[in-house]
Each structure stands twice: as C-alpha cells, then as structure tokens.
Amino acid sequence: MRKDESVLVAPASGIVELADAGILEGRQVQGRQVLFRISGNGVAEGNPSVKLKKAKAVFEQSRSDYERAAELYVDKLITQKEYLQHKTQYTNARVEYETLKDHFSDGLGAVRSPNQGWIRDVFVGEGDYVQAGDKMATVIRKDKMLLKAEVSQQHASRLNDIVGAKFQTPRGQIYTTESLNGRVLSRGKAMSEQSHYIPVYFEIDGHSDLIPGSFVNVFLLGREKKDVIALPREAFIEEQGNYFVFVEQDGEFVKRPVVPGITDGEAMLVRQGLQPGEQVVTHGAYQVKLSQTSSSLPHGHSH
Image (cartoon, rainbow, N blue to C red; front, side):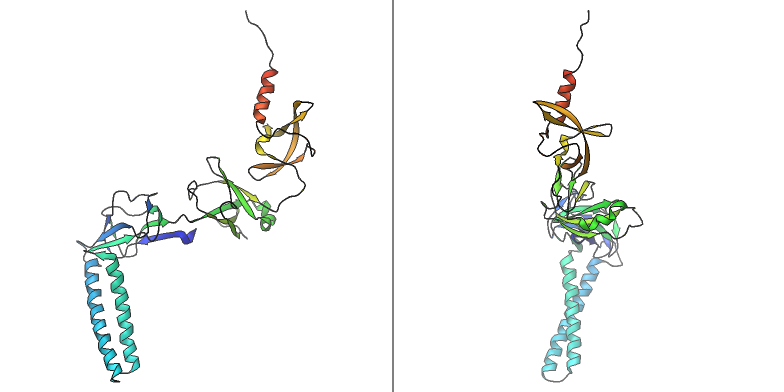
C-alpha cells in the first residue's frame, strides 16, 4: 500500500555514515531505529552543527522577546497584534529548534525509521555526500499489502461482478482475499499507457510468505453460481488440449472426455460430460491413469 511506504530523506547536507553494516534491502527495522547519520565535518554550506547553533540562538532570542512582550501586553504597553507577532515568532523558532535537536547530536544528523517494517531500497552508501531533501531509503510496513490483477479487455464488462480473488504464489500456495481480510479497492475504468490490461486492486493483510513486488497468478471471483458441477483441478487429466476425468462404472474407472469451464484456481466447472450423482475420481487421477497405462502394456520374453 502506498500509504505504508515511507521515504527517508536527508534532514541536512553532509556526509553519510551507516548506523551499522547491515543497512541493506530486506533488513527488518524497528520504529525510531537509527539507520543513517549525517556528519557536517568538512562541509561548509548547510553544516548541521552550524544550523543547530543558529536555530538555538534564534529560539532563545525569540523566547526572551515573547516573555518580555507578554509582560508589556499585560501592562497594556503594546497592542495585541504586536504581542501575537512575538508569540508566533517564538512558536516557529521553538518548532525548528526542537526538530533540529531531535535529529542532530554531536554534529551528527540521525535518520530514523518512522515505523516498524523492512527496508525496500537504499539509495546511499557510506561516505556519500547528500544534500538536504535527498532520498536515502524507503521503509515498508507490512500491515497491509496491495494485490493488483491485470484483466484482459474482453472481460471489461464483468469487472463490476468481481467480489474477491484467489491467487497462487510461485511456490504453489493459494490464498484468498477473504482469508486475508481483503476488499476491492478499485476497478479500472481505462487502460494505462504502459499496459493493455485493465487493473483491479485489492487491499489484503500482510503475510510473511508474500513478497511485495512479486508476481502471482490471480483468479478473480464473481457472484456465486448455483446448480453447477465443479471438481478440484487435480481431477482433470489434460492431453493435447483435451480434458478427461475418471468416472466409476461397475466397479471400474473409465476415462471420459469433458468440456471444462472457468476455474477459481482450486476448482473448475464442468460444462459437458458429467451428470449429477456420478462418482468421479477427484484426487489421484494421474495415478489412476498411470496404473491403467502400465496394466495395458504388452508383455514379452527375450532370449
């Protein structure tokens, strides 16, 4: 989720020092953990130590002026407008000084992770020079993740029927948006210049097995269909584009051609070839095929 990605920027110009040698992509970090420090040694312009000293001087002077103005205002020796001007100057100077003081100590600017998560990108290295505002790293929270499905244009009219999704990781695990507290965020109304597909976005809970940026096979789920025949995908045998299942007849397993329909990643509809009530092999269909093939092999003898 974009709102869970934080970009860490340099608070001042200076030389980068890594907090430790393990500041690398994929590193788990804690909230407020120091990842980088910025040293002003050898830097004239924008030196953090100089900025902190100047901010402190301005803060102390504005505080003194504000306290004096408060006394004068009570005695009605200055107007309310003048009093409020001093108060505003003091407030701004205090915020700037406390911000700098929080970031800098002993001439080093601390760049901290804003929350618990992991490092996605590191843009700087030990000894690099950065200017104030330069990107240094990005930190990702894994509380929530974004699932993006790219849908072919031919299914554009069916996007409003989508209520959820199943998706399969490269390792073969199948997850559902329902099990991950997911919801549909948006259904694309147009294609982007970079893709000829229509995007559909889901928000899901983060999971340790899901790697942001990885590719998965997505099966979009529409409204529930009634009065249909559906079998687990492993019940189907595919041979050169044709599909078969094994049906029990008189105590034997008979291979029967079927016309499959759509799938949700785990089950597949049967459009033709089966009748309600028939017994079908739903697990181990390939083992049945292999056993029938081996038993039908001709036997011979060699001398």
